[in-house]
Each structure stands twice: as C-alpha cells, then as structure tokens.
Length: 157
Image (cartoon, rainbow, N blue to C red; front, side, top):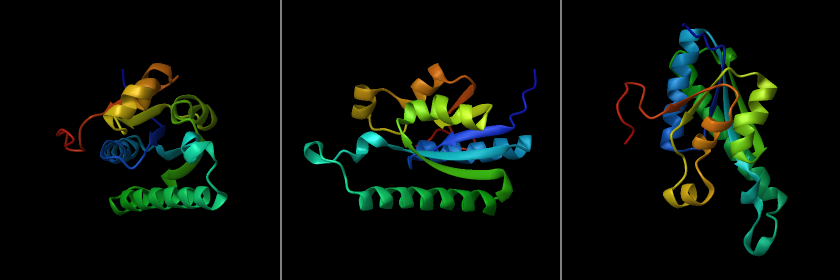
C-alpha cells in the first residue's frame, strides 16, 4: 500500500532529536508534494514562577517571540535547502504539549502524519511526566513516525 502524506505536522522544542525530525519531515513533504506545519508548544506549566506566582506578561511575550524567531530560522533553513516556502507554515501554541500535538492541532489542521523526535526532554523529566512522543504515539488519531536517525539514516548522537 502506498501512502501519500499531504499535511505533515512536526513538533519542535529545540532539541537535537526534534531538529532531526524537522529535517526529515521537510524531505517527506517534498517527496509527497505536501504541506508542512512546524509547531512549538509553550507548556503553560512553565509560566508558573517560583512560589506558585505567575510570570509577568513581558516574560511570556518574550518566550513567544523567541519561539517565533526559532521557527522562522527553521523555515529559512528548509527553504535554503530547496523547500517551497508556501508549503511550510509555522505555529506557536500555548498548552500541554502532549494534548496539543496529538489531538488539538491535528484536529484543527487535518494533518495526516506526525513526525516527532524520539525524545526532547532530559531523563528525569521523562521519568516524572512521561515522554511526549510516547503519548503522541499512543493517542494520536493519525499516523506517527518517531524519528531516531538523521537524514542520512545514521544514529542521532
């Protein structure tokens, strides 16, 4: 069975694994003449400061601006490597990354494939809250590819 993926979602968090997933998703989108949605989710739990206080609006705004800048840099990289800028959209969302990626975003944008890095958190965080990629794999209502290798299929170091 041949599968053409027309709307690919790749969530990124700045980790090496997520960036490899991004680079592979660009290639898959090009091969399928598909559209790529590049998403970063700013976890709302991170906005609770020390002693339970909320971070001020300027800090949240700066985090959002930094995320937007990072996504624009990834898009520029893809275009420099031959991708069509019209086929790549970038998105910054607030919320719980697990549910935003696996359910909310995919429902809204009708993605037919999620390509996600194998891990983006440190080992302690993964142990305490669980892996986002693991959650997405179990709960997404679309195909999910866990990217574990670079674009030339060598192990991510």
